[in-house]
Structure formats: C-alpha cells, structure tokens
Length: 479
Image (cartoon, rainbow, N blue to C red):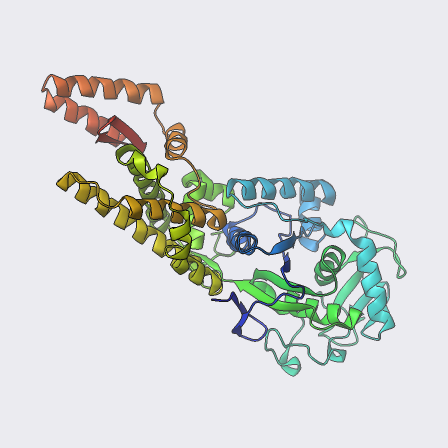
C-alpha cells in the first residue's frame, strides 16, 4: 500500500509524492509564546511528531521546521502587564514549551526558527510583494491586497465577496479594502521594532510563517500542518502571500490540519475558563497516558479530554507494561527467538497499512491492544495446560510492540523502569511499602490471612496495588 495523506486543499486523500523523491519537507505552525502551552498545542505537536517519525521510519529524508511566534500583539500586551520586555517573556515561554514537549516525548524538529530571527527575510518577501503589485505601503504599514490574488479562498473554501476582515487583522483606515491584511506594522511607543524601507516597525503575523518556511525549507514544500483553527485566515493568507511573492505554485503540496481538543465536552476557551495547560495535565497523569490519549483518535478528529478518558488511558498503559513484564517473567525464552523476518512480512502489514492510510494511529493502537489481549490469552492457556504453546506468537507480539513504539513514541520503556517511575510518584515512600509487603508475606506464611488482608487493604487505600507473582509480590500505583 502506498502512503496516502488527506489534503485539506483538495479535501481528499492523495498518494504522497514529494517534490524530490525520497525527501520530505515539513513546516508546522508552532506556538505564539505569551503563556504556557495548552493541551491543544500538545495535540498538534504530538500528531506531527508521529508523522515526522513515521516518514523517517518509512525511509524518507525528512527536514522538519516548527516555528515560535515570538513577536505578536498578545506577547506585547502580556509583557507590558508584567513589566518585562517582550524578549524576556517570549524566551520564558519558549523554554516552558520545550520542556513540555520533552516531557511528552516530542522529538526536536530539524529547525526551530523564531520570527524575530527572520526579520531580513520578512522584509525581503514584503518588498517582493510590493514590487509584484500585490501589496502597498500606507503610513508606515504595508498591506496585502487580497482581491489581487485570484485564488484567495481556495484552502478554506470561503467566498471572497462574503468575507470580513480576519479576526487577527486590525481594522485600519489606511487599508484600501477591509479584507487586506498587514504584512508590516508601524511601531508604537514601547513596542519591539526594526528598521525597514517603510520606517521602524514589526512584522504582521501571517508573513512570519511564510518567511520562516522559505528561509529554512524553500519556496515550495511538501507538507504544511497546524490546527484546524489556522486554516483561515492564517494558512489562507500564507498561500496568497507566498505564491504571490515567488510566482511559484503550489507553495504547499499537502495541507494537513489536526482536530480540536474539547474539555469535558466543552470547547476549550478563555471565556469558559477551561484552558488546560500541558504541565497541569501532566501533574494528574503520566506523559505516556496523555500521549496515548492524543493518539487513540485519528489526528483529524476532535477529541474530548475527560478525567475518565485519561484514567482509562492510564490503565491501558499499565496493562501494556504488565503484559511485557509477564512475558519476561513467565516466558524468558521468547526473547531468544529470531522473529524479525516472518514478523516483517506478516505481523507488521496491518500496522503499516493503517499508518499508510493517512497516519491512522487509532487503528495501530487498536491492533496493539488486540495483540496484548492475545498474548495474555496464550499465557493463561499455557498456565492452565502446563504446555508452552505460542512462543512464535508471543515473539511476534514483542516485535510488533517494538516497531510501533518507534513512530508512536510510546511503550518504549523497560517494564521495570515504567513501574519504578510510577512508584516514585506514589504518595507513600517505597521503603514503607516494601516493609508492609514483608509483614504481609510473614502473615501469610503464618496463615494469619486476616492481617495479610488488612495490609493489602491499607495499601490499596493509599493507591498501592499488590500482585502476587511467581517471583514474589510486586506493587504498582493505582492509575
């Protein structure tokens, strides 16, 4: 099966044929760094992290750029409120974003450009647009003439005659048309500013991404991604200004947009006060559970973040590692089997087919947990019969898990490391738990089952679950 991508521009799945055979150029819109990043940012970052990993897994040479918007009205306003410079505020939240991404297992892109480091390119592109008749200067500002770009609206499907000024474009009497958007803004007192042919000023939001994309990847690229909320006006404006400035079409071959994250069935918004920061989510849940939750739905679908859904994903992660631990404890000979050739031909095909069908991580995770169920059934049957039938099947399952982890970015830890991390976050010292386990084992040996049950109950009330395994009693933290 060939790799197919749903293209937001054509509204259909298309075979992925990059501009240069064997290479893939990807640009994804990153955060505007004026506050802590929220779970919506995590959805986009994790989705495109998997796409980045999978393209490399399939043998493509991938160059991936994800930007930081570090000059913007929101940044300026927040900096003024806090009495700090825009640079200081932006750097603080860039650092926080990078920390959150690292916690979620998001791989660093090839390039991470900042808007403030791309001013020369922004000015160059703006001059080109003026020279080609697509933009005009007015009182220190420069605006793009939307109606002069005949294909405006081709991404969002909006009719130009029905459009109003984009929500992030300031209404300005200097505009020739209310639809025109700012490429360059004359500076106001106290704002960041740079010298330009039109006077001191700063870039508009939309031109930043076009310039950063051109500088780091070129005039035409293979994939451009971001949240669905960016389709209009941001990505529509990117297409217009980029293709008008260079004369090259298409600016982007495949447009990809991820779905929204709702919180308890409500749209995430400041007015509802339900913005969920990534680091707050990680205080309540493990990073692996959050990542599994984000990948358990197709990247284009909306998802609903609830306490219950995260609890289920936490339990699913634990179930996975318990199964791997059980295979290692009960079937150590499985790891010695040479499974790779057969597994690549047979066991991996459903996984590859799912990923080749517009990166269907939800299907891959479904297959993965079916393999978990199958593995436990094999081990249960062997325990009942006393015969170890199923060595090859278990080895195939392990191989599948190992391969899936390479692009899903989950389930790559050793079980002992996973459980050690869970214990470290328990509300009771590990030494105290081990002491109580010794007391319980002594009670069981003395046939004092009442005391043994009381200890188990005491630990369970503190969130500690005991399991009596062939090699002794092990404990985990309740999901």
